Length: 83
Image (cartoon, rainbow, N blue to C red):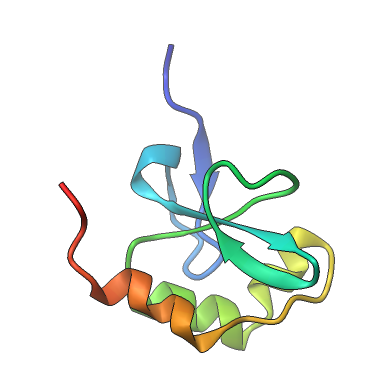
């Protein structure tokens, strides 16, 4: 079965779920994780996409609610992936 395609809320690029980072709203806060229930918003694995989605309220638009974005989430884009 093919991996579903999603759109980055920062740049609009379409990619498979596996290539993107998923975020969801939990108690009004933006949290990262594939296992978090609810609507999901996806970004490419580039810091510029996360920053653009934050500045243009992309997360709030896609998640259909206001969310607080912790600036510490940017570390997800600067840390080396665990292999």
